[in-house]
View 1 (tube, helix red, strand yellow):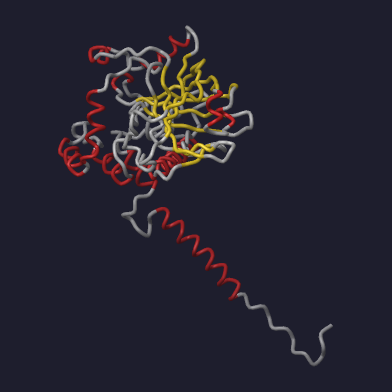
View 2 (cartoon, rainbow, N blue to C red):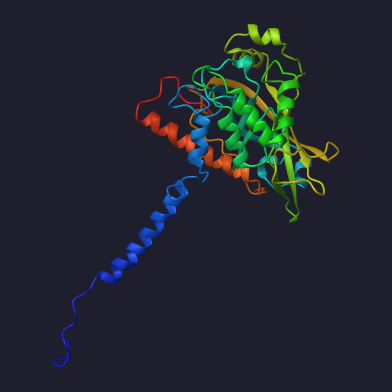
Length: 361
């Protein structure tokens, strides 16, 4: 009971408490606004990058991935090698089999693209070790990235957007981009001159980004990896590309799997002195040490509309213990754009905007 001499307690004044709350909420709101680009409209955000990728299609395709929209789900296993343990403690790389779920796809934002006309092919994988850890990869048939910065990639994407009047990119925009970014010339030369494999099964898929491998003794090194096919290479001629069925690659893959599993060796290239881990547009020298750390084995394929890969985000920054991310800004940007694409297509499907055939990579 309060002393009679004491003044009655003051009514609680909420202003100070509310001010603190409003300060926290205001700070969060400013953070979200900055991340969304509202406070700096010219800042390159994941949303703006995704918008640019969407613009490379003449029409929207709700419910589908913004890039590599057409593909096929695959399942099988990954078999680690004894040599891998000296490089990384990742359980997936240990001898034995790990579950594999993946997707083969072609470049472009249309789920109705012509398979044999697509210059870029991709392999996306989710490997799950016996410890439950996941490793997600997103690899492409080109051996290096076209440009060395996120800003240059954005400019390249805008330059490649089709003109609605012609359905093709504006040659003047492409020429202006090439002049402003001469480093893109070597990628253009690869696209022009490299032979086209006639199958998903005999295509090499490259991780292009650098990652760290950590071994059980505390050692570490930077690496890049490729999935090199065991199927013999056969080139697809220009005449064959023109005559091929629109779904040629998917149909051909199913036919091959009817004869048995398909295999790719996972080959790790170890960085040497001076090799840049930040720039995926710069190839490392051919004389770097290379180690086969395992084998991808694909046993079955399913349509992406009903396959288990349909709703997966193959974010290449999801790695298990024993693998670390490099400081490559394009790798971080890819993860952010993948998240944007996943969020958009899931919302479109929830709103009933997607057609019945499902979503892509």
